[in-house]
Length: 110
Image (cartoon, rainbow, N blue to C red; front, side, top):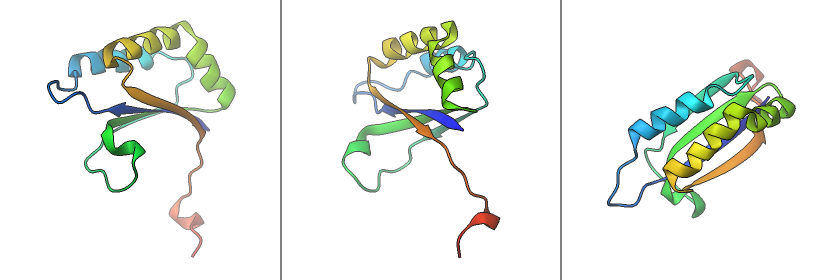
């Protein structure tokens, strides 16, 4: 499984996170083909490290494979969502692609 993760920076101090635009972005992104799962996290506290200090929200989109993720990004829905993402955030985000691996408690090394 592969995922696209977007780290949203905290808006400038004189602005709030635009919830209406956020909802519009989610609606656009959820139209990407073969999207299997989506998670959204609001950052409560920054604990350590310099890079992530300004993150306010983390959004993850899961796909069965890297090929499916790439196809989704290249799709019309992916292109429209991406263009709107740049517009409504004023490019205040970081985006990564990662292979996702997950272990259940029975698989933990003890």
